Every structure is written in C-alpha cells, then in structure tokens.
Image (cartoon, rainbow, N blue to C red; front, side, top):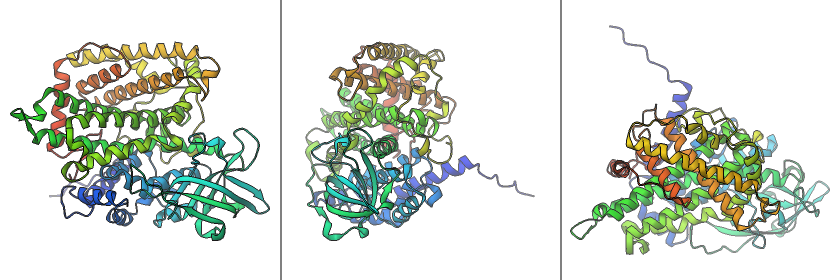
Length: 584
C-alpha cells in the first residue's frame, strides 16, 4: 500500500517553525531555573548579580547559539528578518536575566540599528562580520550634562582632511570597556539645529590608544552585571569611512533607529514580568495563611489575575509596535514611542502590585524568591537613557494636533495581520521606509471600526461592547484637547498637561491593541485569546487607568482569567500571547 506523499510546509509554516525552534533551543539550553547545579539557573544568576558581573555561563551559552545573528539582517548572514520574532526570541533571555539580555546583545542591536538604517554597504557587511563573530558594539548617545536632550550633546567629531577628530566624553555607556566598535553620536557642526550632529562607526583597533581611554566603571543599583562606564577622546583621528550616512544626518538616523529599538526592547522585557508573575503564583499556591493558601485570599487572587491581564495588555501593544514596523512603517514613529513609554511603566507598576502579595519575601535577594527582587531592580532601567519615558512622550506630543486634525475618526483601519502574532510579514525590516512623523493612525481607526463589529451574546461580550465606547469617548476628548493645544504645548517644552495627553493616548492605543488581538484570535486556534473574558477584563483595567469608573465586570470574566493563570503555572507555559512551553 502506497503511503501518502509528505506535505511540504508553506513558507509561513517554515518561518514559524524556525522561530519556535530558536525559542525552544534557548529554553532547553537555559534549563531548569530551580536546579542548584544549573550554572544558568536562578542561583547562578543571582550569584553573578551579587558579584556585579554578567553570568559567564550565560554568555558562553549565547556565544554557542551565535545569538548575535539575531541582530543581523538575513541578507548579511543573520536571522533579523522580523522584529516581532526578535522580541520573541530575546524574551527568553530576559525571562532569566535582564542584565544578560542588555549586556550580551541588546546594546549591540541598538548600535547596529543606526548602521542598518543609514550605513554604507561596506559598513553593514563589516558590522555583520563583527556581530556574527561574537563581538560587542556599543552605542554612545549619552552625556550626563544633557541627559535625554541628545541634540545638545557636546561630544565632537571635527571634520579634517581625510576624516574626523573625536574629542570629548560619552558617559554611562554599556560595554564600553569590551566593545570592538562604537556608534558615536557626535557634533560635526557648531550651528544650532537638527543638522549639527552625525553618527560615526569607529572600530576600537583603529583608534589611537594614546588619544582614547575607557572611564571607570559605574556602580549600578539595577542590571549590576552590565559594564557601564564611559569613553574619553582627545583629538582622536578616525577616517572618512567611519561616517554613517551623510554629515548632519545624525538626528534623523537616531530618530529612525529609535523606532526599531523602542518597538522591540519593551517586548523583550515582558519576559521578566512573566518570571516574576510565575514566582509570586508559586508563593501564593504554596504558602498557607489563615488556614488556606494565599491564592485563596481574594485580594491576592485579584492581584495575580490583574498582573496577568497587564502582561497581556503590554504584549498586545508591543506586538502591534513590532509588526507596525513592517506593515505601517510610515506610522511607526508614534506607535514606537507609545510602546517604549507605556510598556516599561506598566511593567514597573505591575511588579509593585506583585511585591505586595509576596510581602517580606520581596526584600530577599537569594533563594527561591530572590529572582523577583532582581527583576524589580533591573526593569526600571528600561525607562531610562536616551529613549526614556519623557523622551518618548516628547516624540508623541508634537504629533497629537496633526493626528487630531487628520487621522482620528477618519482614517482606514489597520490590517488584521497587525494583531496576529504568528501570521507572516513582508520579508525584511524596511529601514528606509520609516517616517519621522505621520498624519495617519490606523491603530486608533481599528478601535473605531471595531465598535460596529462586536458580538453581543454572552455577558462577557456585552461587557466588551460597553467598554469600547468608553475608549472612543476618551479618543474624542483627546481630539478636542489636542486641537486646543497652544503652539508652545505642541513641543518638547510643553506643559505637564501635554505630557498627560501623551499618557492618555498611549493607553487608548493599548486598548486598541488588546481589542485587535482578540478580534484577530476569534477565528484562530487559541481558545483563551478568542475568549471575550480576558479582553473585557483588560479593557476594564485600562478604563480605570484613565480615571474612568466602568460598571463591574460579569463574575465569569475574572474567574476565567484566574483559571488561565493557574493552568499556565501548572503546565509550565508562558504568560504572554504565545503560551510557550517553558523549562521552568
């Protein structure tokens, strides 16, 4: 009897299988976090943190997997073809150790984004060679005197015959002492304005050792293992070939590359909240108080359910941010800023809520619950630096009045594929199509369109139907308030009221993302994501975050979400949109 011919997987199925395999390989290699003999288990990671070092075993593991290939586009021999896949793979590293994720590779990715955005063919190939060979690359924006206002940076790259001379300091630079190359944001013109800076890619072995030094290492509260120091140059020559893009293009290159990094990095950090939630669920299930488990205490149960909902909300917004780079590159500027502003903020807030359930054990830096304390210290670092919260809001504020006039309640909705985690994307990241600002907002248009296409059978569906108009009312109020902004309040020097508008807008985008993920899952194969219970509960929390007082949810909503919290804990599945099998 002849056997059936094997069915060849589609290109999409092969792509999804490849990503799943990379995630599974990372999980397998990291192993059981509770095994005391595992050098990259919790005990080993905490010991490295106490010593102020990255875990050597963790770096060797990532070397063996050639993790640097995740930061290199496929055309140059790497695996960076989809931004959502990068966030998904790196999430497994951040689940274990935020410092390892940042210190081993994400700093290199941040530097590389500038070169993929505007570098020459030769620079791209050389950078790919470095990253695929395991080298680190540092990105140097920061100067302590100017903080997030990098356009005022004073570090100089003075044009001379045949190249530039570097002069000045860059501070709080990750891996400055061991990077093989540096992406340097430098002043190349004394004139004021956005054309006074450029980006240079300088290799360490091409620098004059007498005119270049690494400054002493900083002692950090969070990400202790990251090697934060600085660079000091004194009239140090670099060749013309170091210039990335054109002279005076530095601000534009930075703003385009920020769209890539702001979209991707928060999605990676969700892994840390995943581990933290799992840690507190384990405590609540195993700890008995008043003759019952902590999990049976209504406040504790509600807090853990709320933390799971916040994680799903963050993942929905992060997913939209990464996929918008491919599908809506001309709109990504505002979405990336919203992701980088709201997701780290929500992660930090949720960690605080979880710490209350953990009680006194929250302060313990070793043992079964020590990893929670480490994540509490590490996560806030993601809200700092050149792409910090205020800088992201300052990116959103100047665009609000334009969006209010041109986009809200009038544009076309986003494609459904924006909200579907495993659906294929156009090949490659369109670095050259990213716009600095847009007059369109397809994400909020999807929220508007959804209002006329909501099921209304079950109590949970009716709850969703009641909450969506609240979000639309918020968008209408945002529109009115944005149109009434004074010229001064449309700039980065705006009043606190404008920054509050940016916060509210980010929350509305999160609501649109949650709703879009649910609508996209209703014809999929994930019964939990297709269930209206979680989206009703998530929208309810977002409405309260906006200061609204929505009606109580149907009793079944939180009960269904709580069941999922316990299922994923006992079955060792991730708490994000992917519901991934975990080693522990």
